[in-house]
Image (cartoon, rainbow, N blue to C red):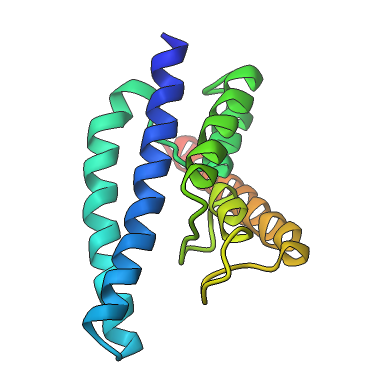
Length: 156
């Protein structure tokens, strides 16, 4: 069962990042307008992400992001062991293709972005700050959600 979940996280993350990079490369070939390139990239990413979540959510939860898994661990939806295993599978899915993401919310993508010299790469010395910002953003989102849902429950 856990192997299936890990494969799900690996394949989902790898496919998502390959889509982001591939659609970005194709967009660059289709238009010199950066706005159009971003639109093409965004549309491709949104549709593939929808498909991936639909396929893999019943299997692993379709996290595809170590920060999402961390929040699930904090919320006690997954165990610390599963968090670490998911994170390893997700990072292996960014590193497998040595790709980068135009997204700034996924530490697994940051790892891949360190390994590219394209316009979307990240200098290795900058990566820890990206990851820190992503973690802070996830925690703020989690605590805001907790606050909103706690207040909502008290009103009932």
